Length: 76
Image (cartoon, rainbow, N blue to C red):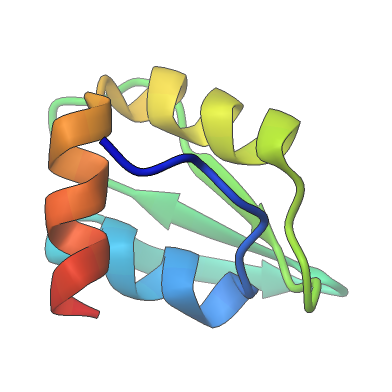
């Protein structure tokens, strides 16, 4: 399995949009995504290089496995 590396925010936008999340609002340098059935929004910062701690937190909040993450990343 590939290693997690920092990604551009647009890649994360693509991954979580393909997983069923939709953009709800944009505030300054952060974008909030919601998905029905999930209580917490995903907050993706609009950084050129989003760090691993943020990516892992997003995956945990979304209930996404590494396998699912990498399969969606391959589609983006």
